[in-house]
Amino acid sequence: MSDHVVIKSAQDGSVLELDRTTRSDTFRARLSGRGFEGAVEVYELGPPKHLAAFFRDLAVHWRGWPGEKHWGSLESQLSIRAKADSTGHAYLDIELRGGTVQDWRLRGSLLIEAGQLDKMASEIESFVNLTHAA
Image (cartoon, rainbow, N blue to C red; front, top):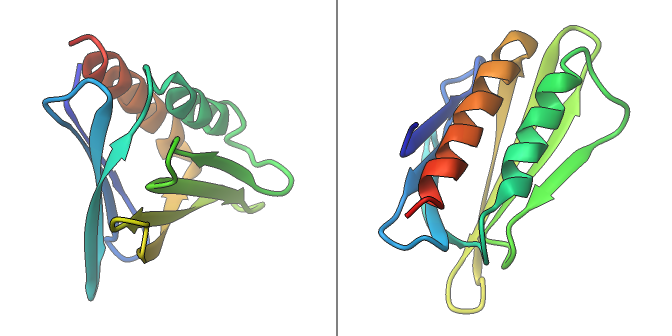
């Protein structure tokens, strides 16, 4: 099990990191790349099993899917939109939102090789299970 997940872009080194917090109903999301960095505490009421299901769905459909898939946290601190192309790539558009009334946003994109999706889904599943076991 892992209390830290790193999803790294194959294109430019941009990174989405998820970290366990001391609370069972939150985790920390940090997005960074060339010239930008931001982090939010993501609130989830109960285990965010749908986050793990979202990544597992991407892995199952590694050859691509039509349109866009979307996952968003309960209070919109973190949202992920996924698109695929016909050459074996997935594009994750990440948005962090924060502030007292979500008065700031940080957006970045990660290019993911299709072959990375299964490992990524397993790491997210382990993270979710560990985070909400406490």
